[in-house]
Length: 151
Image (cartoon, rainbow, N blue to C red):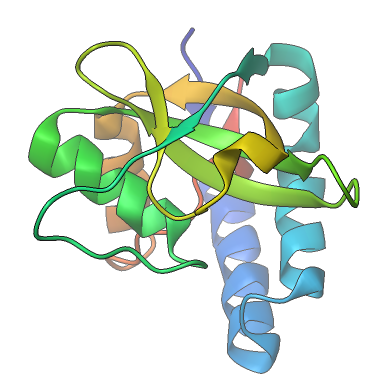
C-alpha cells in the first residue's frame, strides 16, 4: 500500500505543533493524543493487527519512548521493515502511538516495550525510503511518520 505526503503547508504545520508539544511536555499523554489525532484515520482504515514479540539485539540498547527512531534505525541498519501505528495496553486500555519492526524472518518485533505480550498492536507497514524522506523534511529528526501521510 502506498501513501503520499500531505501538502507542504500541512506537513510544516503538523511538524511545528508536534515540535512545540514535545518541547513543552516531552513524550507525555498530550503528545500521544496529538499524534493519534493526526494518524487515527489512516490507522483505522488501513491498519492491521500484528502479533509482536520482544527481542534484544546484541550490542544495542533501546529506551522506552524512542520507538520511532529505534524502529527507523533497525530498518536502516538491519533491513527490518518499519511499522507504525498504535499499541493498546491489554490491562488499562490506554492507546500509545508506537513503531516496531518486522525482522528478516517476517516476525513482528519490538525492541522498546519490554512486555509486548501485554499489548495489542495495530499498524501500517511503511517503506524506509518514506521514513527517511519525512525525517529529512523535518530537519533530520526521526520521529513519527503517519501524521504526514495520506492515501
